[in-house]
Amino acid sequence: MESMNAGDSVKVTASDFGFYKDIEAWAKATGNSVTDNQIQGDKVVATVQKGANQPVTTQVATGGSTITTTSEGTTIVVFDGNFDKAIASLIIAQGAAAMGQPVTMFFTFWGLSVIKKPGVKVHKRGLAKAFDSVLPSSAGKLPLSKMNFLGAGRSMIKNLMHSNNVDQLEVMLQKAQDAGVKMVACTMSMGLMGFEETEFIDGVEFGGVATYLGDARQRSTNLFI
Image (cartoon, helix red, strand yellow):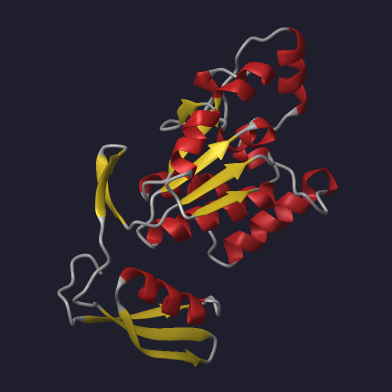
C-alpha cells in the first residue's frame, strides 16, 4: 500500500474469517477504502483502494529504520508469563503497528520471561538463582495458562499454530520488532528478580514506570495483559 498511488487497488486473500471485518476497520483507520469484500469458500477475498487523503502521520526512527505512525497509539503492559497470553499481546501489538500506530510493550515481573534470550547462562546466587530455576528460560519454554499438562499442552498449541500457518512466538517477537514495536524491560522487576541485561533478546530497551507512563500518556489505547 505504501508504494501504491492514490486510486490504485490491491486484491488480498486471507484464510482467517476475522479478516472480513478487520480489513474494513484497517482501511478506515488508514484512510483507504474497501471496494469489494467477500467470503468465497474457505477464504476471504477483499479489494482495497488507496485513498487520496491519508491520515496525518509522523516519522519515527526505530531500530535503524523509519516507520510512519498516525496520531493514535497503543501501550501494552505484559505482566503475565504464559505462552498463550504472550501470543495475544504480540498479535495485538503487530495489528496496531500495521495500522501505523506507535506501539510500546512494557514487560514486567513474570512477563520478563517472554523476552529472555534462549541459551544464555548467567551465574547467580540466592533468590536470583531461585527465580532462575523456576522461571521459563525463554519464550519457547513458556507454559500455557490452561491445560499446560507439563508442557504437552504447549506442544499441542505449537503444532496447531504450525499447521494453520501461524508464526511461532519467537518469530512473532522478531516480526513485532521489525514492524517498529518498542519493547521495554522493567528495570525495577529486573532488580527484584535478579535478571541482567545480557539475558534479553537484542533490541530490548530498559526503563522504569516513568518510561512506560511517558509513552502511555501519548497513546489512545492502554492494555494490561
